[in-house]
Image (cartoon, rainbow, N blue to C red):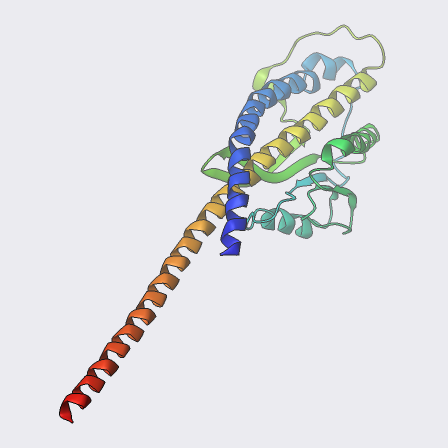
Length: 260
């Protein structure tokens, strides 16, 4: 079957990418932890908050939600939940990564494919910089399929700004010597942190889509094999019935000749 050859190629292609994507996602788990701790130490530091006019978000403004889907076919309902969340999200401003997620809808600030993402990361950075600097958003969230392990992939909505208040949790009290405008320094640190968080989520989503694609193509090949076996059984049965019919017809003819 021609379709079987196509699915085999897709399965093999995903299989080649799955291990690399999984290792990349797991590597980013550690990067994410260190990066979040660093940003938390800066943004929720007791001394900076008490001594400086630190950047504030505006809780009366809409959220900025970043939706991450995939560009590949044959991924089942990988994009369905992400797309549903984006469609139902009427109030937030949106950035969309992935050609199969809504485009041209209300409040979509940017939209491009996952393949185009790296070449457009600076555009995302510029929007975040402007929104945070002018306090035009209340929070920033990432919505994507998160890879936990080979058997667990779930849709998540992860808030990346503001961070949980680290003062009570971790008691950040490190003091800093500041040269220059603290808000500009913090703004650059925050934007760097956020753009890297988006990169982490995009890589994680890439691992998820390859795992989903590999599993779906594997299941499809199994069903194709079952269908082929059933067709072979039906064909064999029809062939046996035809042969048996011919034997009966020959037997009848032979008996007719003997009767004469």
